[in-house]
Image 1 (cartoon, one colour):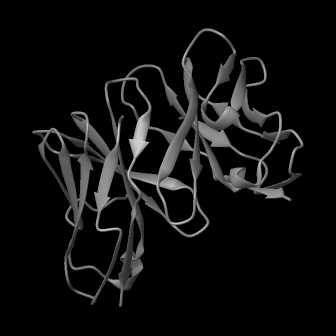
Image 2 (cartoon, chains in turn yellow, green; image 1 turned 180 degrees about the vertical axis):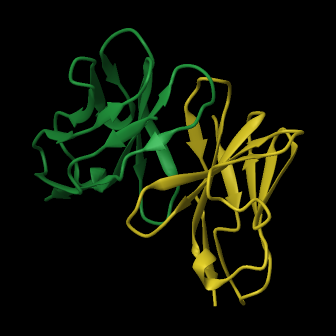
Length: 115
Length: 114
Protein backbone atom coordinates (compact mmCIF):
# COMPACT_ATOMS: atom_id res chain seq x y z
CA UNK A 1 0.00 0.00 0.00
CA UNK A 2 0.82 3.72 -0.08
CA UNK A 3 2.28 3.79 -3.57
CA UNK A 4 3.26 7.06 -5.17
CA UNK A 5 3.84 7.14 -8.91
CA UNK A 6 5.80 9.87 -10.63
CA UNK A 7 5.94 10.51 -14.37
CA UNK A 8 8.03 10.92 -16.42
CA UNK A 9 11.07 9.30 -14.87
CA UNK A 10 13.45 11.07 -17.22
CA UNK A 11 13.07 14.03 -19.54
CA UNK A 12 15.49 15.92 -21.76
CA UNK A 13 14.39 19.13 -23.39
CA UNK A 14 15.66 22.33 -24.91
CA UNK A 15 16.21 25.50 -22.95
CA UNK A 16 13.12 27.70 -22.88
CA UNK A 17 10.53 24.94 -22.94
CA UNK A 18 8.17 24.06 -20.11
CA UNK A 19 8.09 20.64 -18.53
CA UNK A 20 5.28 19.08 -16.53
CA UNK A 21 5.88 16.37 -13.94
CA UNK A 22 3.01 14.35 -12.52
CA UNK A 23 2.75 12.84 -9.07
CA UNK A 24 -0.05 10.39 -8.32
CA UNK A 25 -1.06 8.54 -5.20
CA UNK A 26 -2.21 5.19 -6.56
CA UNK A 27 -3.97 3.54 -3.66
CA UNK A 28 -4.82 6.37 -1.29
CA UNK A 29 -6.07 9.91 -1.32
CA UNK A 30 -3.57 12.61 -0.59
CA UNK A 31 -4.78 16.02 0.43
CA UNK A 32 -1.18 17.09 0.77
CA UNK A 33 1.77 16.31 -1.45
CA UNK A 34 5.33 17.58 -1.29
CA UNK A 35 7.82 18.48 -4.01
CA UNK A 36 11.55 18.15 -3.44
CA UNK A 37 14.64 18.87 -5.46
CA UNK A 38 17.83 16.88 -5.09
CA UNK A 39 21.18 17.97 -6.45
CA UNK A 40 23.86 15.38 -7.20
CA UNK A 41 25.24 13.84 -4.05
CA UNK A 42 23.18 16.15 -1.90
CA UNK A 43 20.14 15.89 0.29
CA UNK A 44 16.55 16.63 -0.57
CA UNK A 45 15.38 20.21 -0.37
CA UNK A 46 11.69 20.88 0.04
CA UNK A 47 10.44 23.17 -2.70
CA UNK A 48 6.77 23.41 -1.87
CA UNK A 49 3.83 21.81 -0.15
CA UNK A 50 0.93 21.12 -2.47
CA UNK A 51 -2.58 21.27 -1.02
CA UNK A 52 -5.59 19.87 -2.86
CA UNK A 53 -7.92 22.62 -3.91
CA UNK A 54 -5.77 25.49 -2.75
CA UNK A 55 -2.54 27.27 -3.52
CA UNK A 56 0.76 25.61 -2.85
CA UNK A 57 3.00 26.81 -0.07
CA UNK A 58 6.48 27.54 -1.38
CA UNK A 59 9.69 27.45 0.60
CA UNK A 60 11.81 30.54 0.87
CA UNK A 61 13.88 31.12 -2.24
CA UNK A 62 11.70 29.01 -4.55
CA UNK A 63 10.20 30.99 -7.41
CA UNK A 64 6.49 30.24 -7.57
CA UNK A 65 6.21 31.62 -11.09
CA UNK A 66 9.01 29.32 -12.18
CA UNK A 67 7.76 26.18 -10.51
CA UNK A 68 4.00 26.02 -10.94
CA UNK A 69 2.18 23.53 -8.77
CA UNK A 70 -1.36 22.34 -9.29
CA UNK A 71 -3.15 19.89 -7.01
CA UNK A 72 -6.45 19.49 -8.77
CA UNK A 73 -7.55 16.20 -7.26
CA UNK A 74 -6.93 14.05 -4.22
CA UNK A 75 -4.64 11.77 -6.20
CA UNK A 76 -2.75 14.09 -8.53
CA UNK A 77 -0.34 16.95 -8.14
CA UNK A 78 1.68 18.43 -11.00
CA UNK A 79 4.86 20.47 -11.04
CA UNK A 80 5.51 22.54 -14.15
CA UNK A 81 8.96 23.98 -14.67
CA UNK A 82 8.31 26.99 -16.86
CA UNK A 83 10.83 28.30 -19.39
CA UNK A 84 13.37 25.81 -18.17
CA UNK A 85 17.08 26.58 -18.31
CA UNK A 86 20.14 24.42 -17.72
CA UNK A 87 20.35 25.48 -14.09
CA UNK A 88 16.94 23.87 -13.55
CA UNK A 89 18.42 20.49 -14.38
CA UNK A 90 18.02 18.32 -11.33
CA UNK A 91 16.29 15.32 -9.79
CA UNK A 92 12.76 16.21 -8.71
CA UNK A 93 10.94 13.98 -6.23
CA UNK A 94 7.38 14.12 -4.95
CA UNK A 95 5.89 12.56 -1.86
CA UNK A 96 2.52 12.11 -0.24
CA UNK A 97 1.24 10.84 3.06
CA UNK A 98 -1.88 8.86 3.82
CA UNK A 99 -2.91 11.03 6.75
CA UNK A 100 -1.53 13.81 8.90
CA UNK A 101 1.38 12.62 10.99
CA UNK A 102 2.01 9.53 8.89
CA UNK A 103 5.29 8.98 7.00
CA UNK A 104 5.69 10.50 3.58
CA UNK A 105 5.89 8.01 0.73
CA UNK A 106 8.00 9.01 -2.24
CA UNK A 107 7.77 8.66 -5.96
CA UNK A 108 10.75 7.38 -7.92
CA UNK A 109 11.74 10.86 -9.02
CA UNK A 110 12.13 12.63 -12.34
CA UNK A 111 15.54 13.33 -13.80
CA UNK A 112 15.25 16.63 -15.68
CA UNK A 113 18.01 17.62 -18.09
CA UNK A 114 17.80 20.96 -19.89
CA UNK A 115 20.10 21.37 -22.87
CA UNK B 1 14.39 25.78 13.26
CA UNK B 2 14.91 22.07 12.89
CA UNK B 3 18.00 20.33 11.62
CA UNK B 4 19.53 16.91 11.15
CA UNK B 5 23.17 15.92 11.13
CA UNK B 6 24.57 12.76 9.61
CA UNK B 7 28.24 13.04 10.51
CA UNK B 8 29.47 10.29 8.17
CA UNK B 9 29.29 10.72 4.41
CA UNK B 10 30.41 7.13 3.88
CA UNK B 11 30.25 3.99 6.00
CA UNK B 12 31.86 0.72 4.95
CA UNK B 13 30.95 -2.54 6.67
CA UNK B 14 31.89 -6.13 5.96
CA UNK B 15 29.02 -8.42 5.04
CA UNK B 16 27.66 -10.17 8.11
CA UNK B 17 28.93 -7.54 10.54
CA UNK B 18 26.65 -5.20 12.46
CA UNK B 19 26.15 -1.75 10.99
CA UNK B 20 25.36 1.64 12.46
CA UNK B 21 24.48 4.83 10.59
CA UNK B 22 24.50 7.86 12.84
CA UNK B 23 21.97 10.67 13.07
CA UNK B 24 21.53 13.55 15.50
CA UNK B 25 18.78 16.11 15.39
CA UNK B 26 17.72 19.48 16.68
CA UNK B 27 14.09 20.52 16.95
CA UNK B 28 11.92 22.74 19.10
CA UNK B 29 9.40 20.44 20.68
CA UNK B 30 8.97 16.71 20.47
CA UNK B 31 10.42 15.16 17.34
CA UNK B 32 9.06 12.79 14.79
CA UNK B 33 12.07 10.94 13.37
CA UNK B 34 12.37 8.92 10.17
CA UNK B 35 14.87 6.86 8.23
CA UNK B 36 14.67 6.50 4.47
CA UNK B 37 16.82 4.60 1.97
CA UNK B 38 17.53 5.65 -1.60
CA UNK B 39 18.79 3.42 -4.40
CA UNK B 40 20.38 4.94 -7.54
CA UNK B 41 17.99 7.03 -9.63
CA UNK B 42 15.08 6.17 -7.38
CA UNK B 43 12.95 7.97 -4.84
CA UNK B 44 13.17 7.36 -1.12
CA UNK B 45 11.82 4.26 0.56
CA UNK B 46 10.51 4.51 4.11
CA UNK B 47 12.35 2.29 6.60
CA UNK B 48 11.08 3.21 10.03
CA UNK B 49 9.83 5.99 12.25
CA UNK B 50 9.81 7.13 15.85
CA UNK B 51 6.73 9.00 17.00
CA UNK B 52 6.36 8.12 20.66
CA UNK B 53 6.61 5.15 22.97
CA UNK B 54 9.35 2.55 22.94
CA UNK B 55 12.74 4.08 22.20
CA UNK B 56 13.76 1.11 20.06
CA UNK B 57 11.83 0.96 16.83
CA UNK B 58 11.96 -1.82 14.30
CA UNK B 59 11.48 -1.30 10.59
CA UNK B 60 11.78 -2.86 7.19
CA UNK B 61 14.53 -5.24 6.03
CA UNK B 62 15.73 -5.99 9.57
CA UNK B 63 16.68 -2.41 10.39
CA UNK B 64 16.07 -0.81 13.75
CA UNK B 65 16.80 2.54 15.33
CA UNK B 66 17.12 3.78 18.87
CA UNK B 67 15.75 7.12 19.97
CA UNK B 68 17.93 8.75 22.60
CA UNK B 69 16.41 11.96 23.88
CA UNK B 70 19.32 13.02 26.07
CA UNK B 71 21.78 12.67 23.21
CA UNK B 72 19.27 13.85 20.58
CA UNK B 73 20.22 10.89 18.45
CA UNK B 74 18.41 8.37 16.29
CA UNK B 75 21.03 5.95 14.99
CA UNK B 76 20.08 3.31 12.44
CA UNK B 77 21.30 -0.22 13.13
CA UNK B 78 21.23 -3.72 11.75
CA UNK B 79 22.74 -6.79 13.43
CA UNK B 80 24.07 -8.42 10.26
CA UNK B 81 24.70 -6.46 7.07
CA UNK B 82 23.83 -7.71 3.60
CA UNK B 83 25.42 -6.61 0.35
CA UNK B 84 21.94 -5.55 -0.77
CA UNK B 85 21.88 -3.00 2.07
CA UNK B 86 24.36 -0.88 0.11
CA UNK B 87 22.54 2.38 -0.63
CA UNK B 88 22.16 6.00 0.46
CA UNK B 89 20.45 6.50 3.81
CA UNK B 90 18.69 9.64 4.96
CA UNK B 91 17.58 10.60 8.44
CA UNK B 92 14.73 13.13 8.68
CA UNK B 93 12.96 15.05 11.44
CA UNK B 94 9.85 17.12 11.91
CA UNK B 95 8.03 18.53 14.89
CA UNK B 96 4.95 16.75 16.17
CA UNK B 97 2.63 19.66 15.54
CA UNK B 98 1.94 22.29 12.92
CA UNK B 99 3.15 21.86 9.37
CA UNK B 100 4.62 18.59 8.25
CA UNK B 101 7.82 19.90 6.79
CA UNK B 102 10.50 17.23 6.86
CA UNK B 103 14.11 18.25 7.22
CA UNK B 104 16.59 15.74 5.85
CA UNK B 105 20.18 15.07 6.74
CA UNK B 106 22.83 15.11 4.05
CA UNK B 107 22.77 11.35 3.67
CA UNK B 108 25.20 8.53 4.42
CA UNK B 109 26.36 6.19 1.72
CA UNK B 110 26.52 2.70 3.13
CA UNK B 111 28.68 0.16 1.34
CA UNK B 112 28.63 -3.46 2.39
CA UNK B 113 31.79 -5.28 1.40
CA UNK B 114 31.38 -8.94 0.43
